[in-house]
Every structure is written in structure tokens, then in C-alpha cells.
Image (cartoon, helix red, strand yellow):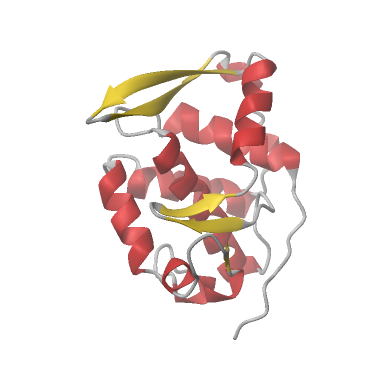
Length: 167
């Protein structure tokens, strides 16, 4: 059994990470589920390398992989502040949420360290053109999701087993 790490939310970094991914990874594949996975890689890879996540959120084991616990709150605040817009689009027999950045100048990249900026770019370069299904499948192969139970917290301690972006 691994002790669960309880991070502290860094709202400035969290909001700007979401804005960053919407600005730089926003293509036909960026929907709410994929955004969750990009944030997962940002937090878990940064934790693996620096013993601290970027956003500070905890992640919950859901059917489509790890989901940040506070993402809905962050998205609602960004939307109410007029920074993003969301749009439900039909997808198969359901809907997917697309994002639009309303004012690119509101992205504050000074919220990130040099290492965090490098990681954000690597994540967009690596996963930007991956369809949602592919990134979901990838997260299911990794220890953090694999060793957590449905609807329970995904343990940061397992981040050491993620192989992407090793230095």
C-alpha cells in the first residue's frame, strides 16, 4: 500500500494550464476527456521529476482514466470570467465538450517555471494529435490508474512508473 499524497491547489497554475492546453493543443481531438488526460500528465510527470504536481489537484479513477477532482470548478470559473467558451458537440451516441479560448492574451505563462513550460510543450507535442481514445488507452496502461480502484484517488506515488518525458 502506498501513502496517498495530498497536494494543495495552485489555482493560478491550474487555470493557466487549462488555458495553455486550449491554446496550444486545441484541435479536433481536444475535448473534456482529453483535457483531463493532459492535466494528468502535467501533474504526474512533474510530480515524478520534482515531487510536486503543477496544479495540485487530486485525480479520481474514472472509466476513461484519471480525472482531476476540481476540473469542473476551474472550467466553470474560466467560463464565468469570460476566458473560455464551451460547446457541446454530438459524438457517437453522446456529446463531447469542445473549448474556445476567448482572449489569448489572458494566458499568463509566467505562472510556470522553466521546467513546467518545457513539460507543457512536450505534452502538447506528444499528445496533441492523439485521438481521445488513444490517450485514454495509454493512461489505462500506466501504474497510477492501473493500481487505483474505481472512484478512488489515483496515487501520485505511482507516477515514478510513467515513462514519458524522462530526462
